[in-house]
Length: 304
Image 1 (cartoon, rainbow, N blue to C red):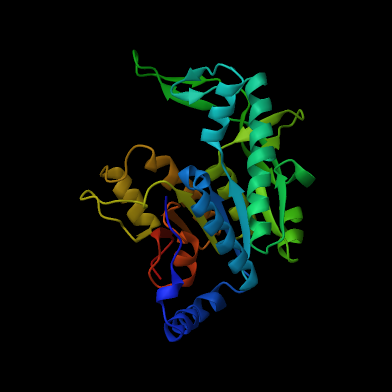
Image 2 (cartoon, rainbow, N blue to C red):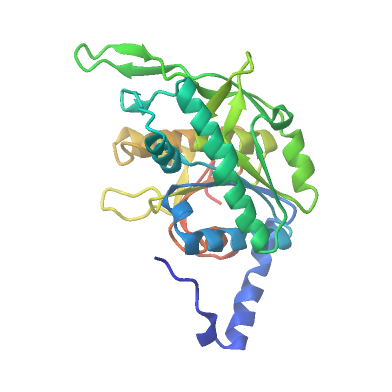
């Protein structure tokens, strides 16, 4: 388990110097919106979860407007097993049927959302838990997924059930919260045109919201350090042009491709930069925003 920074061995002068060096970064993000997608194994680590909550409170106290969007795939899978609800998979993706969507909403908008809210409040913040349904924050359409047939290699449609993708976004309720002393914590469930509840990929939800809010930054906390080169070294900065080139030459492969593609779409929507970083690194959010070191791979239209 990760351990918090031990400040007992750092003298007061050094601590003051560290705080002073954060000032220009605080000024850069003053009254700016930063959307943070929180998920992965960091959510299951008590120490990391507490550190994350403290970092979010510090951002708010520093004049930044953090907006947290969370996932919960492992927790949903665990609850389905406990309830003995069998999952059907198509092309490696879970089908969200009537029974599954009920569990998804219960876990995401219920237990996970409220545990994050409680953690932030315990660190002195004022968090409010909502979902994409609240005040029609997000309306979705059914996700149409195309995959290659393993036999014919032809593309075919796959019905994933109640899995949605963003259609209309009205960030009014989030704007009201961020303009006060409140911190929004958002579960990625939303309503379709018929009022049906849909599950939305948390990365996709966070990206769409960041674009609609013209956020200063979108941080995607994952279980990997970021985008790696062919030698396995972290690439700290990528322009849109460079990212497309790395996908073309297969430096970026597998599950990182859709993540990078979603980042590029967010940049096209007007977000200044998107950062893919490892949520298992203690204080990853503060390292990325309030120091020169950064904590992952930053993608932006052009290099700063």
